[in-house]
Image 1 (cartoon, rainbow, N blue to C red):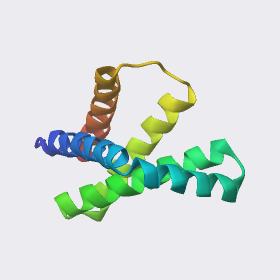
Image 2: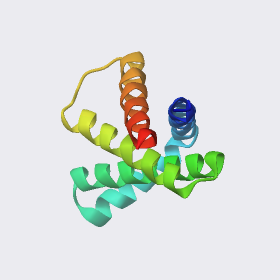
Image 3: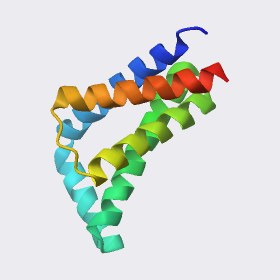
Image 4: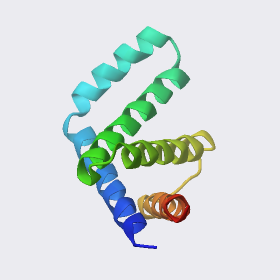
Amino acid sequence: MSILWFYIAVVLACSDILHGILWHTFSDFYIIFGEMIYHMVNSAFVAWIVHEVLEAIFHFIVLALVFQSFTIGVLAGSIHLIIDLTHNFYEWKMTPLQHRCLHFTVESIFFMIILAL
């Protein structure tokens, strides 16, 4: 098996860091946008889900462009979404390093399994 799984996990981690940079850079826009979404759906929970899905779409776009593969983009966005929903829903308290390690480990194992099939 090649180490493509490793490259995907690294690019996904970089994509998450890029998302964080964009989040902090355009925080005023995101706050207004989040408030608009909240008023459309009238639920903080649904607004949070919409945010996570939009983040997954961002990761899909980045990975699909980097690897020139729709499939890798969909899988990367999906696994990242599942991990984010899980650890946020259960309110796991993690440092930034623990958060990054959780994502990197689960995403690496996921792609090792997928690419081994």
